[in-house]
Image (cartoon, rainbow, N blue to C red; front, side):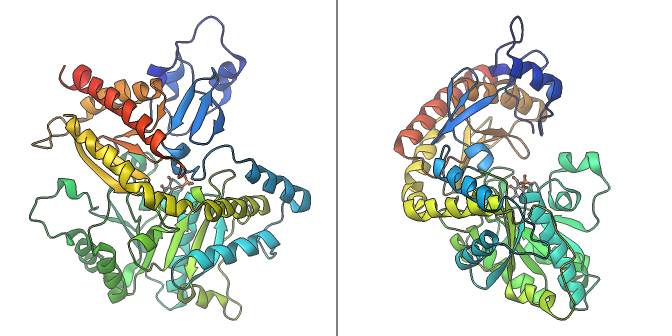
Length: 465
Ligand SMILES: Cc1ncc(COP(=O)(O)O)c(C=O)c1O
């Protein structure tokens, strides 16, 4: 799944910059085939401004992925840095273990106010995996406090990504990410996702929701703790829910006493045009996990937002949630999140996404005239293009072809043309786009121009060849 950019970066030789040397010797990049950079430069991004970033040679790239679905407010917002500096001067750090501090309190209240329904209690973490890990533990613990201690299983969807720590990884449904670390935390069960592009035409649109019920019954409802789903599933390429999907899932969860976690590490903070993805699809989860856009990733922060019903048993008598992370609710991160949300409100970024979504989508839809484009799907500023060998039959690429197409050509070519986006094959091969929420017509046109040219070349050079 690593994005391989070595094809787009110069071969190493002669004079290497000091940074290149140090990177090669010391930096261990995540999800990266390090050997690919033995003889090619590592891409080093040195500066960001709005929707653009610049590499060590001064070359400009359109950040069509918001630096991994993160920088929702765009790069280079100095006022966020100023808020951080002010907080450092006032109180650089204190923990949320037994102590509160003003920024964490203010942020918790603000998040609770924006979150749907009675999701009023906020448990801060340092990132998305920790948020998922915390939510899974919280669900188990909730059931235990209610005398249902045998409920430990989770139900997630195939190909979904929910993080990499051992508990969160048991929710992640990508075999290649799980296999090297098995056995994982017990209790991870997987059901089909909503990739309706690959469904028979006459399939009941709520089939995938009903599969959750089948799985709960198969496992035994008394053993199931929670269902964890993204509003729009990222891995596999922006699978949107069919109409009524989440309402059906909610009914099923209620029927069997199972908690519903909406994993919105990507889908919150305007990505889908609302504060939270659950608001876009009009459902009420018991918990929301979030991270990334909460601070627009100016500093790391995540959170679990919990309903009154789920929080209540933990608030009684001598009870507590015996779980914590030193940096959860970090004052500087909380101050940054507050400044980030100020920008969201002042510039109405959610409204901007709602207003511009159709324009962005129509531009991508027009790419269907290229023979390699099989499907275009997604919501808000979170869209994917599925690549195929044959539009009629929807024939996809085998593993070897996909490797040649994505890592042998597309990732490098897109980067070379100045577009950062994701060419991914955790499911069938897709290109994913998730630009900063300030993106507008000029950025859409640039994305269109680059995609059109690179996908046309991919068809000629890699597929037809
Ligand atoms: C839906 C979802 N959950 C969890 C995670 C894990 O977040 P992190 O990488 O911050 O640990 C991600 C990361 O992309 C994600 O997309």
